[in-house]
Length: 207
Image (cartoon, rainbow, N blue to C red; front, side, top):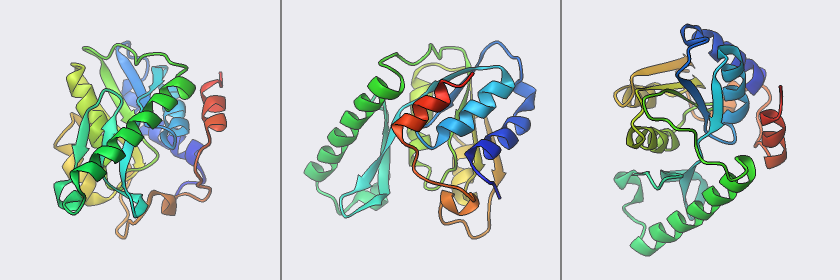
């Protein structure tokens, strides 16, 4: 459906055209997969662009899957149905580990800078796709605590069930594709890979 994240971002930007040149818009990428998508959107909309650092809480025996997510301010979503078999110590150890990774990413990817002031702003949260939706839920929680005026969640692809649940949490949901048999974000990209710190910094340094 998309050649790469850049093309997905260009298409998503057009779907968000009504927010072009609006003064109170802040585009926030969920790193690192969402950075190039969000960069293209922010460039097209002529909007402020930053990174909201959020991490999946992965299962110890299956790091690709997760039972929740934590945002940089400590906002946390945990799926009780998924995490029931984990001990309190296991959960706390995973939370601690991901909190350390959040600090590392703030230091490297955002150069230690704080999030922009989100109070009374219209925030567009962007990832390269939404699978389980846990990281996006944690990002939404952070935005609500910051007193934003309006939350828009936007992504090139999402599952229909997850999209339906997220729609109830935000002011607007913009999803380009909701495949019938959606299993993973990677399936809709011709060129999909894990983004390195170096590439993330290169994207953010583009004019």
